[in-house]
Length: 259
Image (tube, rainbow, N blue to C red; front, side, top):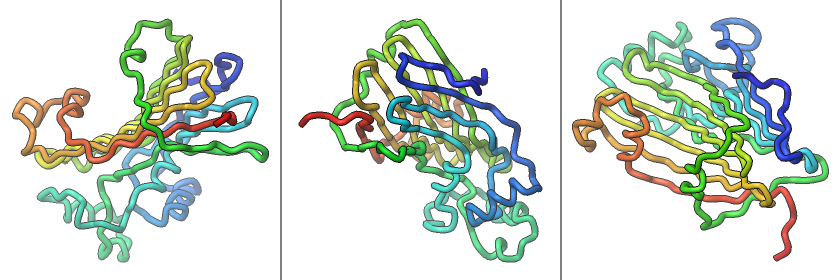
């Protein structure tokens, strides 16, 4: 469900979502993407107008999620040797190059892997203060049954990798009386080759002067997983089996604190 008109949460936050159609294969907006990102290679489905915006009203600080900013974090032409291969990868990557000669000779990250964690925007008078922390997300508290004041699911981009798997970036947000929770998830499945999942979680609890942010990178080759997980469509089940390569915790302060 779209909420283009901001919803007031706890008289402190303004939260809004919007859902848009798929970016056209041609046109001015497509050209803006290609020029801004420096590539002609884009996911099959980009939901250009789909956004989530969380605003701290008093400080005018924002947390924004959108496809363009996410794709800016795709390392398109570097670390090519780390990109997973499938038997037909060279053939189909060339077929999707739109006959641009330069793209034929330049390999690219056809998985569209992004380490995007959201866009933090500051006001003229205030800025987010980001600090590393050891404080963990209270998952048990998040599992408690509470009234859902607001909920939405969004897809920023999606690609079926020429029927060799899937690559997508999705969002979920829910607001409860105790606070709000956001999950931004990049998920990659290359059939018979690899699973990859990069999760960013935001959790705000009413009364705190900060938002807790957790970032986790997980990845494992399919061959290392138990047979029951190698071809399952249960993404949540697979993710628990993947190796954690990075775990980062931060506090995003919107109010000054006394040390």
